[in-house]
Length: 197
Length: 146
Image (cartoon, rainbow over all chains, first blue to last red; front, side, top):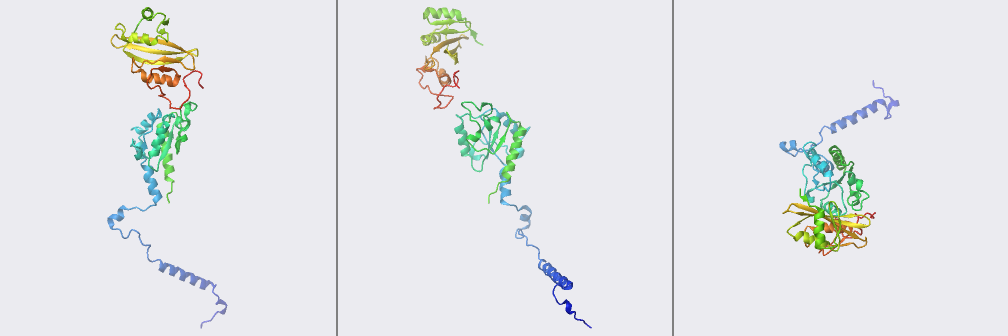
């Protein structure tokens, strides 16, 4: 004989709660039997193996920071440390920048290796203006940062940031190639943080 | 290496040719009067005995009382050399004759001396600043420049 328990008609009984929960789980489980559709499903097998999906920022930043091409701006003696950085022992091409561009149209990065005089300053400014966006500047050495020992001279620009915006400052007189490489890595980290949208 | 000529012998010859022109025949250089500087250098260049056909360099020194301009002359034919100096008094407008008609190489050197020391070279066709830019007002290699 079935006994109707009138005291258990309300919905918040343990059994009812368990049943409702079970129904919800079953419904969700039944709803989720279909896998999330693969966005690459329309690709054929060969293409599917060769396409990676990522964000626009990560891709563009990766491409830009991994192939920085320095433009030639070597007015003084820091150039020799830069040349040593370029050459095989320190090997700047590990960071994708082995090609020094003589044309500012093809360069991304200006490494200002040396003392700048006021007479030379318009030419450097013009080279910077001719570089295509996006472009970056590394101030290499004491003279590039502040004029160095020539800061009080009548003919020396006290720091490249008087005429062009500078992204990374590498101290030293001259900086060791390791220091320049560290500055380049810092610039690459800076580029990696850029956003476009 | 060129053979440095004996200054005293040359001084007596120049003194005979141009009386009163030699100020001081020192050990290694011939200091001449600035009025007869051009005639003396012309003589040193054109006379077959000396034949100073090459101007190695011109430079200038500030001694506060006067500017001393130094001419390094050399002869390729005879392989000898001589240092001629002249003194230029007054700081406002020191003037010397230009050597550009004798040696073309004097062009840039005289412009540089004008630029940094403020010595004017009469007869120079283009006496403008060469190291500093047009519009720079003073002459920074002078001792009283600050």
